[in-house]
Length: 158
Image (cartoon, rainbow, N blue to C red; front, side, top):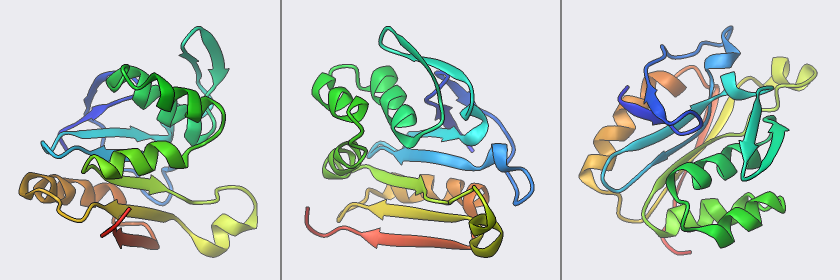
């Protein structure tokens, strides 16, 4: 997959995760209208990261989204503020409104829930995805094909 690791600002070159390799599971991916994939996997969970001038342990979706905005959309200061207040829906809504495809890992990894339900994701697609986005989406397949369920929502109206 040709993607950018948005947490570390580098090309993402790792092999796909598996049901046994949870560190390789995707946490969040965004496919821009130009086809560029911004991607992060769970290997960042538990690492110390900085958002702005604050250091924290990366363990929540809001940390990933804050890093995505900080690294690739620094002009969106209001959005970053909403994320740091715990609002993870505002960035997802805004990204979709701008024509991005969003993949969000919604798996509960703790306790027996994981062993009973497996790996789950959510794929959100804007009303008119570009052809290049559709091609980029194909490259995401090996990284999510072991998910037990992926809910796909094509959003026709925001």
